[in-house]
Length: 375
Image 1: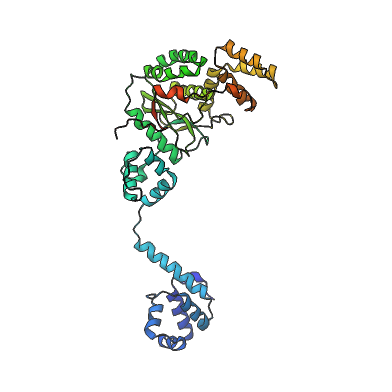
Image 2: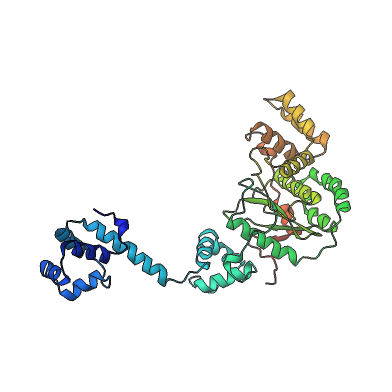
């Protein structure tokens, strides 16, 4: 028996069987009880082989009905491929509509859509949001981000968040960036670690260095903590999500991103950070930024020494004494000890929130507020 690959259509297989038997279409019509015209259409593939017809041919030729149906399926698909006009945007549309939190973007006024069931309207709003002519043209912005999934390309929710950051930052006014001013500013920021309320001064201090600072609430599935990106080579932007509302997290992420700015990271190639509270950095730039963030919050040698001497009890009196000696809020010391020891049950009463201290003085998009963006 010839393999199924020898025939491209069920009609070819039927014609082959008729030829082997020296049968005519009329004879097959007599045997099957069908009209001769119907048989002719089957042989020329003008009529598809149905399940009933396949079973009939199985009885006559002794060939499994599945073989006729398989050929019919392959033939139908080939015909459809010829008739169907390729549309590269379909794949892009499927990816975006399946990966972007579109409803959340609408509710937060990132995109304006009157009819959420109108696909064309949503597609038009997305192309406007991403500033492209077609969905397939959307590309990842260069960035250095503190987020989950180390060294991976940005997910669609992360990418949308980055574009929103860029939209807001591009309409902010700030003096020209000065690396020299930034280096002088870091000690000034260090003085603010004494109390959570002092964080309200951060936006103004960074603006004086030429750094645009924005806070954009994370999309639910984005998992970003902060990002350093550049509008151009002279215009750095630091954005944070404050998804972990803790004083120690705020200052660590901020100093981490400031290190990216000072080193010029994220200008031409995406540098994606590891998850903030997970394992060690696996990239040189991230290791550098992590060290800067940790050392800023508290001298690591002092923290390591304290852990070595006081573990596992960590007396409250000694802990508070160290914080006073270093001139920082106890939350900063607690955060470092908890991270280094994995003892997140320690010092819970000293972990303080900071979001309410920072938001009033910053450009904010989220938690019910919408940043004033002229789209």
